[in-house]
Amino acid sequence: MKIILTKLKNKILAGLIVVGTSFSVSAAPKVAVILDDMGYRLSDSQALSLPAEVAFSILPDTPLSASLSEQAYAQGRDVMLHMPMEAESGKKLGPKALTADMQPKRIQATLESALNSVPYAIGVNNHMGSKLTRETGPMIALMEALKQRELFFVDSRTTALTVAEQTARDLGLPVARRHVFIDHQQSPEFMQQQFERLVELAHRQGTAIAIAHPHPQTVRFLTTALQQLSDLDVQLVPVSQLFTPQLSPQQHHSALPAASVAPK
Image (cartoon, rainbow, N blue to C red):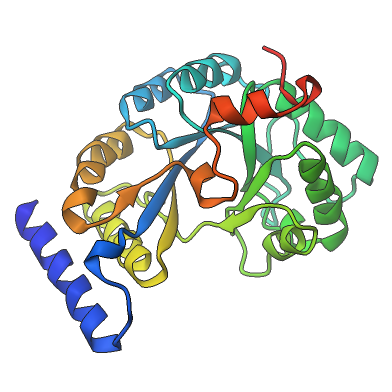
């Protein structure tokens, strides 16, 4: 691992010199990691051992949605709703899914119901959604509802044709995008490659967001890899800190009207 770290650090430094960028190692680039697809497997709870900066994005109305939300919140961890959205593939979406044929009021009601099943959610990212996130009308309805509830949105970018991020930006909603999927192949070699890409993007852009999943092998990989970030001059931060104002989960909920907090 030390050899890999040295090579990666040298690569980053060489890249900074070659492109003549003003970034420096002391600039402390930031990465945020979101673990999504959570809520179905008992093994998901192993992810509670990861640093508290790692956000949990939890599927609605699942057997563990409420308990994982409670435990994550107790750790001071960002809790997000992993909102199922219609995919081009026609894959089964699970409960509380948004589809392209829904009217705005139904989208908003479905979102409200989904949030009620994931206590303490302060943001949302899409589960699948390669069809729905291409549709401007449903995205406007969704982003307006999120803005009303003072939540943020992270576009998982399951299609290059997504309009979700731009729609949110146009409406003044705090929004960001996923830059790297860590584990859509679950070999250690692939995850290491994606982790290196995440670090390089953080140094180039100043911030970068990764999405991963609570597979046991992913949790093992992240347990080791995230400990190396300080050696690579990168800071691991909660995803909520990439938005302004920067609020912890507890501060966020104390700042919101009581009606905006999902009941336990």
